[in-house]
Image (tube, one colour):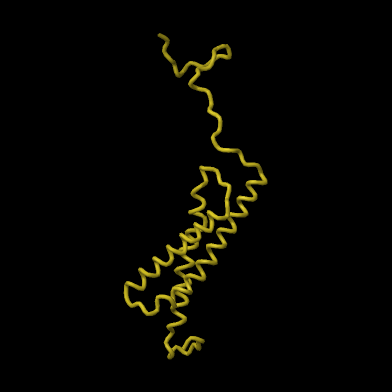
Length: 142
């Protein structure tokens, strides 16, 4: 029985083991045109999520106005999650041809920006709407 010596280098005359054969790639190889198309669609998905975050953040100020206390906060966060899930559905409808290793890009593209812009727009619009009259800053909402 022959032992494998890891220090021993293979000479060109030695046949390779059948275990060391490379497996064929399981994912189709994308050419440059397909990569460009996919990148363009991912960019569109990113900017769609930014636009949805701005709109939904402003809408949250008015939708959850009658709710008081902690329920307003949790309602707005639930609304943010629902809007993000809708954007995932829109992203799936865009028919992105992503390899299996990049499928999570559909979820992760722009998620951080979406969350922070949603929260920023919600806080900003709520602050503008609820400015005290004594502040001296005229607003169209008071």
